[in-house]
Image 1: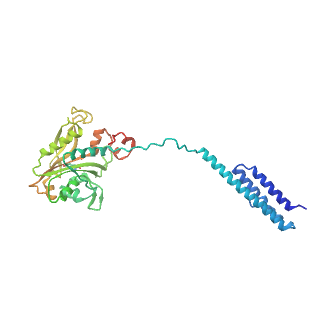
Image 2: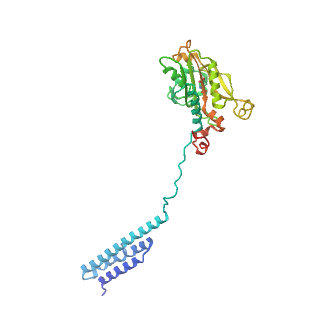
Image 3: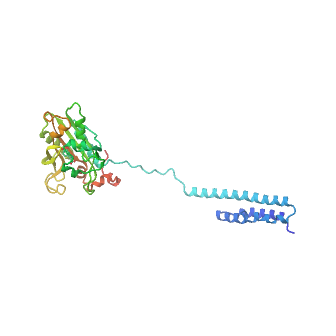
Length: 345
Ligand code: DAH
């Protein structure tokens, strides 16, 4: 008759020695299936229980086999996992002595460079810088600037509305109306207001639904168009070079009377005519004029006592001319390859 207790002990020893030969996870799994899994040989010993006489001794032998082999199996599993980890760590070694990735220094957007330059020029002339706001009311963006609801010039300045009264401002000129209405008691003003403006527009090389402008406003007693001309001439020379001249062409804006477009002699060819000035020798840089008495009055200034001039500069346009930028969209794409070509401040 077979000695099942001895068989259990033999199986225990056989399994332990088989386990010693196991070197990888695949054979460990095969080992588990062969010896320890439900249908493996160690649990299989129990099928002989009915045949043995000393059931207690047999049970103890089977338990010992299962216990020892399971413990050895677990230890092997842990040591293989440890080995695998060591191998991976050895492969992925990090060299802490390597030099780090340099952190790039950001660049100032060229339109911001232009704004800062303009601010410097006007601060030196005693102007203050006003903030203005991007979300405006119809009253400040249009009504107070002599653009009533049915005025045809509104067609060119369609914008983004929040209800009937609130809108994204179409022009920094709205800042003029704020300054004048807020000034109490009424007294002279010299201010510039840089900021964003928004219009429903085609987005192409020279148009964008969002752009930057700089508004200027002077209000005082006895201000004439001579002051306007002298101021803008000084500005043009500081901005584009001492040799520059300006010329005024008559134009129309609802909030100025008379109104002018201001050209600067071409800073590329000096006025002889080139591709940049389209052969004319002149480049248009801004709109301006004498503050319309109706605007002064609407904003609380007595037009019999006060007069003033105002102007509005398109910032991207100046930056494009200045730096030879061909597409207005480049200002807003935040592409480092573009931005890094401009000087740091
Ligand atoms: N607001 C005008 C525009 O957006 C620019 C402008 C023209 C502003 C003449 C002025 C001005 O203050 O006097 O086209």
